[in-house]
Length: 183
Length: 194
Image (cartoon, rainbow over all chains, first blue to last red):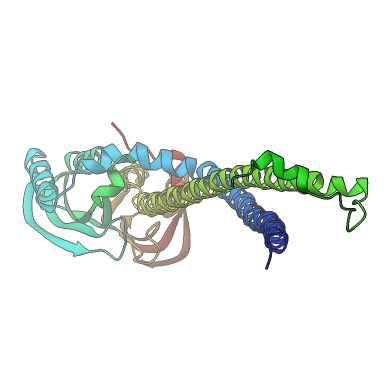
């Protein structure tokens, strides 16, 4: 191989290298462009999903606004009794303050099949007193503990005059703490 | 004897060219070679710049996609939390609807009694499955034939409607049983107080 052959070989090799370099770089560009197109398509899809989710969230917010206002309005009333002890104490002190003759008083803790109100305090109360005084006591309990529920109420004549005997079962809901926390 | 290098030329004989000179056009070959080499380098550089630009765009797009994905997850979490809170609110509403106070109704029934009548027994119990319905029982002692009508009217004025009523009478004693259903939805007037 003389110098001319060597030169020719080098020129040819350089030519091949240039062509190969251009081809390889174009191939890499094409690949990255393809990945970019795919990524942009995924991004557009994700943007659409995000937009849909935001619209759904807005719709849910609009639909639930009234219910959430209701929940917020009742949170303070429901916070009055957060433990069974507080509930029992509250009712017992009301009975005492009412000036009624307590014939029986019993409390029990009830497990409720409800995720929001998992427990109830059930008070079984029987007392006797003046008709007006007794009904005022009931009215005051219903007004000051608006979340309480009288599940059973029985009023019969009392021993004397204007007296009545009132037996009632009063349920107090113990709402799950996280429900009452403002998000 | 040493002969000068310059003097050697003088000793050479003139010789004719072995081959004819190359055509002038072939002088373009090296020029074209260098031009094409330069072009290839420029092309490769441009391509690499384009690759760099595309790679930047790709990175941005992927980052934006990841951000959008995170926002979707956050929005879904917000929606789930909101739905859970709404479910709690619905549960509480059902509780409140089933907790309508009985004092005012009891007072209205008592006030409906005329001078000739007296209540022997009055009872309410809530339906376990549907707490907003009340099982109502009333035992009266009356000499007034229209007393029960008056009492039922008083119940209706308290926004309760009696259903499935049963009534029996023995002399002056009247027994009345009915299911009371509230006509006004509690939600519109539910008041948690102060």
